Amino acid sequence: MYNIDMRGKHALVMGVANHRSLAWAIAECLSKAGARICLTYAHERLKGTVEELAATLPHAFVTECDVTKDYEIDEVAKKIAGRWGSLEMLVHGIAFARKEDLEGSFLKTPREGFQLALDVSAYSFINVTNRMLPLLEKNGASVITLSYLAANRAIPNYNVMGSAKAVLEQATRQMAYELGPKGIRVNALSAGPVNTLAARGIRGFTDMLKEHSGAAPLERNITKEEVGTSGLFLLSDLASGITGTTLYVDAGWHILGM
Image (cartoon, rainbow, N blue to C red; front, side):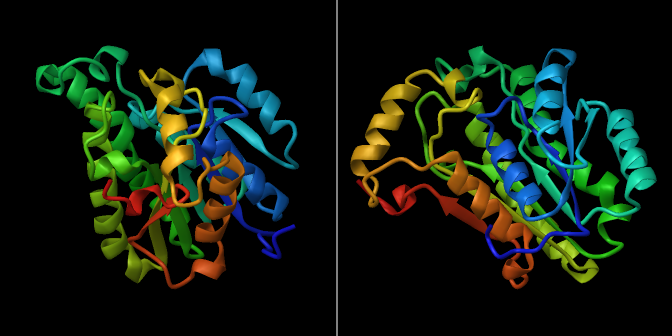
């Protein structure tokens, strides 16, 4: 479909909540290109939805993984080692902050809320990659995470998640530096607003969509399919010389000063 052949390669995709998820869009593209997929879910309430999605992909399997629990990450690594023996792609699409920490004054963010957002949304990227490292370094690999412009701009109602995204992008660069000699590339995708489950938790998101579509250089919003194909590109050999980069998929919004 995209003239990219992923047959014989294996991908761990984390962060799928439903069919609107950006991580799911990437998983679909990888599967269409021939890759075998492992999807994880964080909580029992998501299990049924993720299993239904996985059933539409050839040879996909699903397993539980709460990234705040190291033993669950290690369990996923064991399952992948037993089934595949190696891992060539890792997609980190996980982010979480409490609703009350995304609203009101950023200055009043409580310590526990700040720590939770950074643990789940940023540290998990470092920790999962490290715990999957024996699998990733076998054949060389590409690792990507999902970011947002709030990593380097002030965005209303994004608050502590902006801090988490800033850490996430710094981690992307540092990990790329450290893992390059092992043949592992690390990049971030910074997507514009898309109507996902996570995005709907941001107050004023509908207005954000309208503003983007009116002011972005391409004069429209992006689609989750565009994020999917961009993820496929970064994970493929077409991007073999790219690491430590944040790729913006936002219809050009990030270049604007006003």
